[in-house]
Length: 91
Image 1 (cartoon, one colour):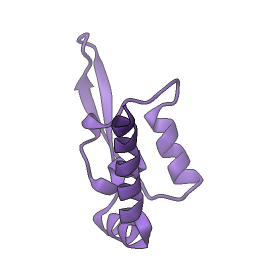
Image 2 (cartoon, helix red, strand yellow):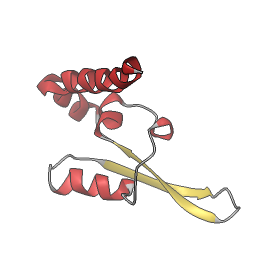
Image 3 (cartoon, helix red, strand yellow):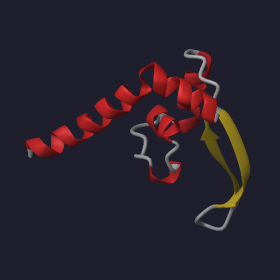
């Protein structure tokens, strides 16, 4: 989740969460435990089965992203990308 926020990537293309961990729980931990100033924007949406529901998009302010990238975030994203590629090369 943090990598998606730092890269300003589209959250709909993010990898699915494993197990019973919710995206809201991850964001809550990043905000409370690590003090990331994550912003949330909720809006009405339609579920696949036609029910009305709410969707939430999480983001970081551009200044926060820039500061995080300058403080080692770029290297974090590079290591994460390399780690994702490594298992594919082993096969």
